[in-house]
Image 1 (cartoon, rainbow over the protein chains, first blue to last red):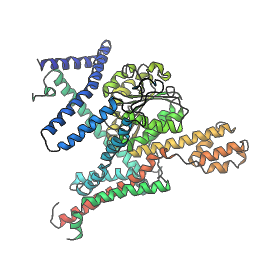
Image 2: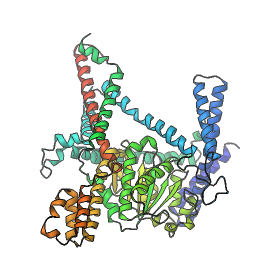
Image 3: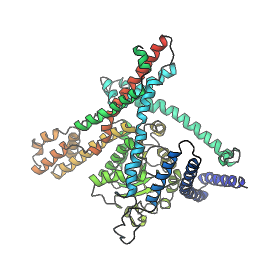
Image 4: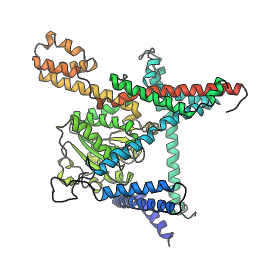
Length: 233
Length: 347
């Protein structure tokens, strides 16, 4: 029963969504199913929070390696949740001064805003910015012209790297813009690579992926692929 | 140990230091001098501008801010310029977010641009913040037919029935264009698949560098304007800045008694070459203008562009040096590789 019911729910909802795209009279069915998805997505946030608690509490109780990080995760998670949920430090909305929880939790100066502005924002920006250092190290150690394909890749990388900056314009600005060789200007060449070679390759990949998704979806709807239910089946 | 061996075993911290300097020094130099590198817009950046420019003032533009602070470096300047063009043109802006912290991105960009430079715009009449909604592409699929189902209130909790500019909005079909600043999933691809294509709505996408190659296949039929990474942002920013200056000078010329088509021609000329404005005010053609109007025109022509509208162009400086460093590192790495291989070593 634990497997049959989810299989039928998947099959029915999936078919409804497909049919609603082709039969105008059934469009509202598809909209209804999409609304359910919205409700499930909102509930998923709660489930996600519960799952986070479960995983990290277990890690702490088992004293697994890195359990101290789990404590930090749980501490910051609980503090942020409490600050946001109970609107700690939020002044009431001037229109409703007698209602203590009427204020804007995300308004400037609130503790929730402070956590976002001075903890979350710098941390995520720093994580992303660190990529530049690792890419530079990888460029020095891993990007080798070992064979013809690698040479092609290197050449393309150089054109794009230069064409996306003022250096590309500066190096080939002597080629007349209106002349027959204007396409050889680095900024033009980088756009050409992106619009022609990249588009051709990406369209092929997109079409391939779409066909793959259609095939996999049919297998799921017909109950042939049950891997999404878990349990290794 | 000779030079090649020493280079082959170079501590990665030296490379980190070089990258730090490659990014840090241009930031300091640009910060001190205020100079930026010139930008020539590509057709895609120009197309992004043209889509919004061709719409009548008062058009309804859905602004979907699907990014977070991690990608703010690339997408923040685009968001700023999108808002500036729409605000200057007089479009009505409807902000939504499919990313949880997209709501903060909306607050940040609207407070900087609208709060700082367009204080006359009225919340609820000229722009509205509808906030974040969970559900990824399901949100798009639903609002294609029923907008109020996901957005019964704005981000401040006000019912959409009490917001004047929400009148007549029942679905995405009621909007004239969609502008999306996207850092991944859900984002530009979902807007193409579930909104712009079925509704045949103009879509402008500003996305991160890694996303851009995936968006090119949708240009030009499903995506009309595409800004890829900080380069796309810088190109678009330069177009918008030039146009805003031209619009402001057009107002000054017309209020000084210069009529169309001369006023438009002059405004475009002065926007391209601001130093011409002061020379022109001494000519006979400017005799009809009052001294105050002439002073206003010269002020507008010579006034520096506010820093927040130059962010993308400023960031092109560090990008230039960082890219050159990357090329240098690749060449050095390969030189060491071939030298080592010739000696019979391996890496």
